[in-house]
Image (cartoon, helix red, strand yellow):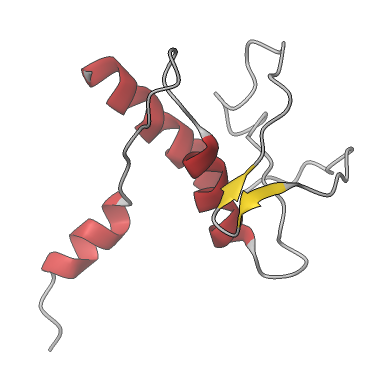
Length: 101
């Protein structure tokens, strides 16, 4: 369970990283619903999504949908046997504890 949460946290962190890399593949994403991508492919690149130089590219920058697409991607992830995973945004959790003056 700890490994899965660590992996999810790492993925979320890497998604949040910005990149100067030109996106070479501009593919229209299919949705299961408004909050979930339909994932049809699994990368064979063992470093994909593990470094800021090779991030998971969820798109949406042009249409200001980047944060929504991050959640859509995370909502599409499942455990090895199709289990639903849970995640939370640590930045939002921290900000909710800060008193606004």
